[in-house]
Image (tube, rainbow over all chains, first blue to last red; front, side, top):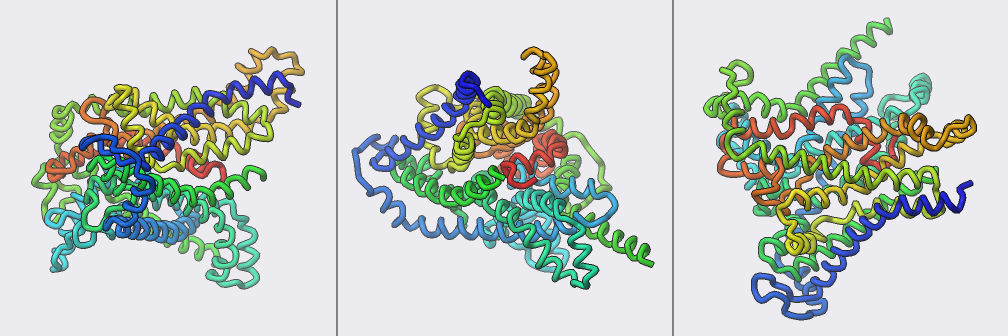
Length: 288
Length: 276
């Protein structure tokens, strides 16, 4: 239907967005790749020549690497588990008939709109502070010794903060998916005498499978690059140094750009593996 | 009989949902309440909830010190600017993909999405270096551009899904009725596109307002928005809970209100149309 004329017009209309994104992707990535093969210390001698894959091996063999991978996996894995499980339960609850459903939805969704630096600081100081935090007061009330959350249970604390931020997202997506479930199907199963757990396992959960996959993939992308929550709370100490934070430290704090760039390339590869899965699902949906 | 059971179940649902909802909302509520306390009341053990002498002092202290207005203006400028720029670039692109699709449209859309997945640390140093070279470090313009670029894929996608819902037949019908291209755009297309554009604007303003990687790494004193302002409370001012709460409340209140209007768009915008 489209004429030659309208097609070239369409291409012209698309050009600015495509060119901008292409530049945004290619220019810095090429620079990162370039630096990753160099010994480059801006504050201590600058460009000290090519070193091949030296930075890549050094980044992996440094004592900070495996702990950072471990911290990343623990944070991402725990937050995903918590938000998906609680998200499914909350979504089912919010889908039930009740009074004031709209208000409850607003209460549940609110943390998603709180900027990361605010949620990190409020949790760190007003809840997790071992002297004046609310948790300390609560522990005192029961005659217990308050926990020094961010040093003694650092990873748990970060997981709590980040889960609080992302639970609303998971709940909202899953609630949207649940609401598209045909309620007649559930009623029919109920009439046939299927117990609630059975209905959940064989009707609700399969229906939610795709939404859960999407929640997992999208959250993984965002969770792999959480930054402010760590910068504001522990600054990477007490075993909370994630891959993202490690690269940030190498690049900006110790200004070892070659080494940090190699780490950056690893982060890009990791994110791309996950992105590939996400794109396949989104792409399939585009055809439908 | 069944009716009473329903009412009873409804009551249980209501109690449970409200309880959990309030628990999740509690940190925000607590921050809000604490912002009206004196510093001594803020750390009182046992904690005081409602019955204290409410004071606005923290708000005046926070707004007077540290050029609060400048941080606020930076946030508005950067979030607003990046969103509007993004829309200007994205509308024609989304429009052409929705109404004149080619066999490559899908690939382009997916490729755009893939750029969103580029981890920021992977390009941190190059951007930092380019910013220094171009004099953009700690400038509102530089940050506006970066945030526009990182949100552009989402903007294009959202607009695309909205535009695709506008039936092409309506345009044809208008043309058959003798509408000129100009009146077709003004009277037929625009009214149908405005809600979608507005939703896109809203969600991306929120995302840009809360962005906390580039805003923390590319700004210092001059162009820092509210995310960085709050981060500066990390220590030792963070131990003054009442003032921290007042600053936090002011930073999140406008977005919380906007956010409540954008729940539906959130689903569409962040799942790229994969969940409806």
